Length: 130
Image (tube, rainbow, N blue to C red):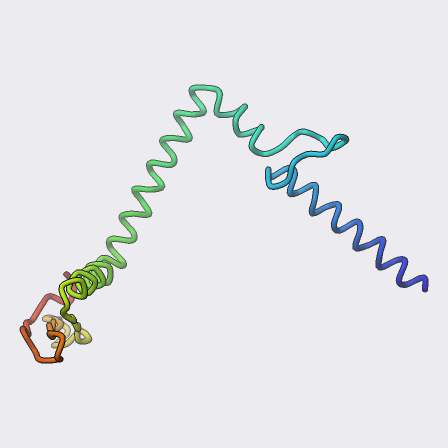
């Protein structure tokens, strides 16, 4: 019986901590006796200053530029091919890219375009990194 009471007290404590975190992060409304200090209020207070707002804006722009460059360099080929396949599907065609082929110095892929019946419309060599 004592272990059940202890477990109930521990669960209540854990729930209270989770509720305080939810209030702080702005997910739950602060109650009548809760501390009204929340993360959104702190962020608004910090961002009210023009210099802080300028620094945060600059950091966000640099981060977006870095992330966009990384995505383009590492995944540009895949994104291009995905867009090509989607556009072809809208036209009723199917585009298939082979795996990268060729010797290490001259890598290429084969792009095959099929119509709705499965016949090959076009087959062409494309750069392995397009």
